[in-house]
Image 1 (cartoon, rainbow, N blue to C red):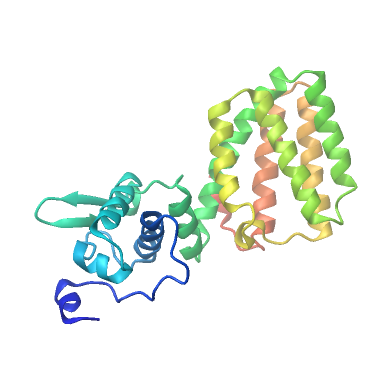
Image 2: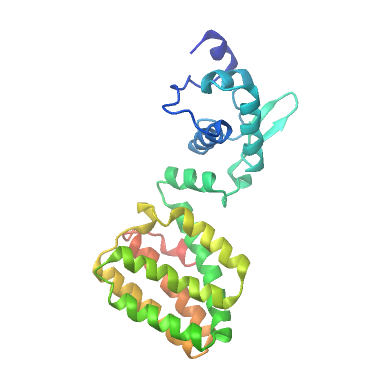
Length: 256
């Protein structure tokens, strides 16, 4: 670190890019998002000044300014005249943003972020199951039956089982015709679906238990029972996450 960096309160110099990123602004943004979420730059403190960031990342002022602009759009910083670029409280962060959510999950040893993600998914999917039970036609009901039967045959193949599992839930979301809710769930799931912390345990017995939940949901939708379908979805998502979480879940938090 140079004397000028020390006096400016700068971050330690970074190693040269192993391969210079195609989008320097995005690369700098991603690194700063991780540092903010990790607490290297705590809420209420200022990011290092522009010259220090330019030197640390070996980029131009234009790149740094673009990165700061993106950080501001994500709700992580606020540019204040005379005070610099201030890190904002976590309550203002865009938790649907891919970089922010990924960094938050990586740093969350208590799994609180994933708990919140599951609760959000549960609320939305329970409502969509309710609507699907009222709107689903014969083709949707047959599709759900086929997927449930298929998953019974895939309990020894967790990877393929998971693909059918996602197709089952997506069929219900499509049947609800709620594109906004489906988009939120797909966005959240898309960012965590391949992470070990979200997938948890995947052995055969858990796939068998999971598909019993799917079958209950299918039966309630086939019977055009909106309340029953919503309750079956609520229980399925809750129970599946508690098991995947390896028994460390907080029942009060998940059942709120």
